[in-house]
Length: 314
Image (tube, rainbow, N blue to C red; front, top):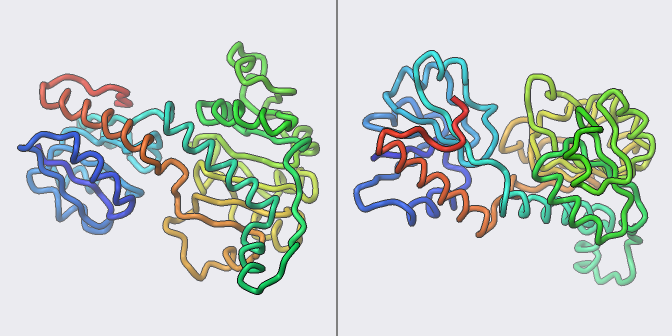
């Protein structure tokens, strides 16, 4: 079986999968702009921050589009369905959710304690600065209550925060599993934001959630609040975020995902000292990748046996 990684980012993905494959399987890697020319004999494509559209589907004869992770927003599902191409993902559960949760807490504390400035002060020989802020007693809002939010809720409890959430149905039975102090519907967002000190985005990107955090949403946040996004960049309106940072309505932003990836090194948003930006690594850990590799290898074996893959979207 020939497996093509579409995109030359996330280099550890192919290494982990290779250890799970047989001697007759072949892994290929191509840049995001060279997918159409690399499809000869390919049975399965694995997109890495690369769009798989109708043109790419027509250029090859692959049977499965297997996402390395959960997000399928880069796959034209309608085109795949029309062509009878199977699409599957790996749910953001287990070690992946735990890895993202740990990383989100890292970003949050790094912002509150001005970690980048502290590092600069070490180099400058300055002791006892900057002044940081404690996370304890602050109100943290989880926007979207899925697996990652659940992993976060368990960990944030240890920091003695007031924990609130926003979800479609705040009265759903699952909400009790999060141990929230309060839960709001999307329609009650502004009420929730008015008491939020740290907003953590845990929502999936969809047509409905694209640009979810716009100028009105950011203005509804308590002045001096922090924003953390390790979900998808397009959940936030770029211009609105830039303005909220520029006018100091937001005290800081911790970003692991962007509107276009990788983000341009000279993007003006990165010039703000209170923006902590990292290269989409929240879920990139040894345990997370090992579990994903097992799930992907299992699906490859199932396709080899002409069985439906697990977690099939189409």
